[in-house]
Length: 158
View 1 (cartoon, helix red, strand yellow):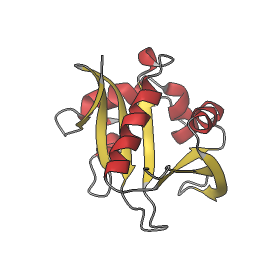
View 2 (cartoon, rainbow, N blue to C red):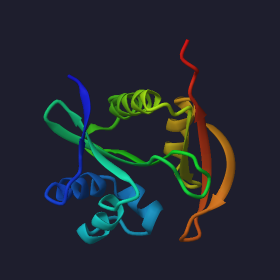
View 3 (cartoon, rainbow, N blue to C red):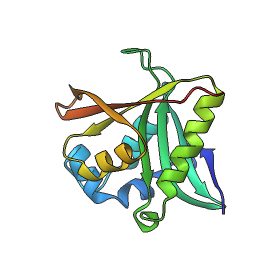
View 4 (tube, one colour):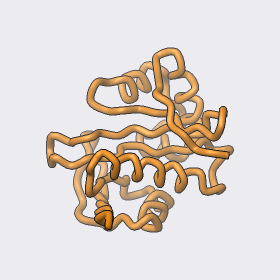
């Protein structure tokens, strides 16, 4: 079984919506509602600024990832979303997907990555800290939520 990425398209967006809606607790923390709509997902995942991919386990869509190669605010690459379908959580797939993402970013010559975690999302903070991300500051999101900004510096290749 191997993890790989596949680009999200307008035709496959409904699968991304199903994955995101399998995580109602996250949706409540993020947006105050348990279910998202397709039109919102199109705006978030099919925009020219970010890259949005499915996390696939062989032929099964098990998650979504959205990232920005360079945030104009700080010139850093940001991983905006890594979400595994509720049915596939707890098996290490998120960790495997992140490892694949990090190796792809290293190949592109990046030396660090940033993420933002909503203050209330304790589970996410634990996950990212376990992967070596370090807290650097607190910021406010566009909708006024407190965001903990984390950064991971990649080891220099020998």
